Image: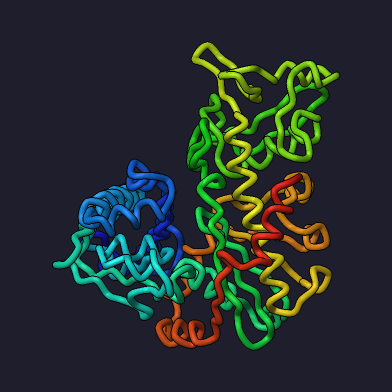
Length: 418
């Protein structure tokens, strides 16, 4: 047994597309970190599709897939940190309402149908005899706020509150947790206005033909040098696909190089006057961008991929604009925009600008938080009064829906363009 027995802790981000975890040492240091694809993806990238399957009677099957994934994730964390399951004193997880309910195999009708309320709103403890994760301690799951705002956003906000004196969050501060659901929060000085937009899985590599999670082989960045695309690849080997940041960077470079027009249409080779036209190929009756070619095959960004990216970034931008209107803030009044989730730890402002992810007055105020959900869960575990702080935070959250509101629909259509 590890000499620091029963002092290690695990935090888990229950992502729709990706499961991520950290194993923390006795002093809060990160001993291991890992992310894997959510095994439920085989049942569909869309969380609503999975919820419908659960509603139709396959909740136990979906739960089993997720539990298997979590067991694999935990085993990998233990292996990487040279710990055993007996060394773990606590484990806490957070996810969106859908993922949280699928993990517990709870009825999901209240999420699928009006008034879209979650089946629970409190911090929950799942005993080991209810779900076996391969650990001897219960799993804590963060509270849900509404049918569309979950514990993952709560965790991100808890991370923001864990700052040194003098660095308090200023009114107008905006937090965006980018994933399959883009969850957004705006601080008005007394409460957080929180909401969620269905962005789809494109930012996490889902519904993208060559998409993948952030792992070795993922293209993380793309730059333009003269008439050539230069790829940055995680692990330094051959590119295998696009993760979220690589996708955004490729789209931005393609816009800069004139391969994509303002509406998101991939141009044909004869419409491009530069040598960049060599990256355009016709496949299946439409044009695509071949960003890498080797003996093993081609890596393409297709028109369908690009449309899925547009839907994702349009939802984020429109949701941001509606949230600001609801909170009474102009774009110019926002002091800081904090982005966490699927796009990694940083993206140059120029990329954000070229893909039109956010209104331009906010771009220079944007910074990134690496793994905001895991960081917030870590703050919760580290605090002696973690449960009290969590309860106080949830009392300061005011949720409202975006889906179906005329303002969101109008802004969403406009936000699809580049």
